[in-house]
Image 1 (cartoon, rainbow, N blue to C red):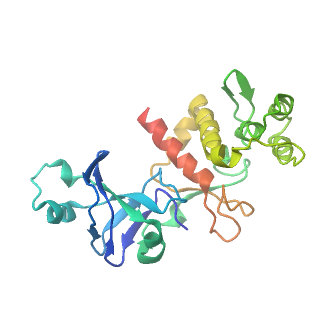
Image 2: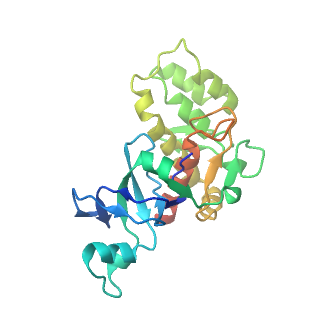
Image 3: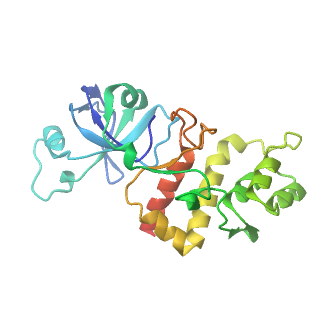
Length: 246
């Protein structure tokens, strides 16, 4: 399982793609070789569906020196930089360094870190409408029927909102599959930006992995065998970074 925010270490030399620093392309179109044992962190904005994934290399001064010839003391190139790596290489030729035992696992709104659950009762406003939970927001954004959207928004519980969102008799937006991650991102961000206690709780988690420990959901959670995408946990980590930078 590959989770954005986790740290890996290369086991074998592999061909890289493009070298970046501070958003600028340093080596467009050049093939780079990642040294064995070079550590790198999966970017929080990584897209698991992409063929290539952007990572941030750690302690990369020696590699930079080999590429540029030399690195002056205090040079910006002493800092971590980014490269694009084929996604399959991370799965097959890298070793996970992060300790999952130290990760934050959440699921039920009634358990520890239950505030991270979409069912947690922390409402917010978005475009002049109030949503009691992220679940109400997410499910209501699936449909174009305004009367049905209002019904979901006003559901008495997040479970009721989720059930309404599964109604196969109602036509969903044709582009729902393409926009659902963005919708979830908006809802989670609004929730944590609205409630200062939640903002502090999330940003206080440091660089810890955040994992939705759902045994039923292989997309938003990690599923019954821990092999799911953990997309909700990834979004929470992305929101954490946004809140820190604002």
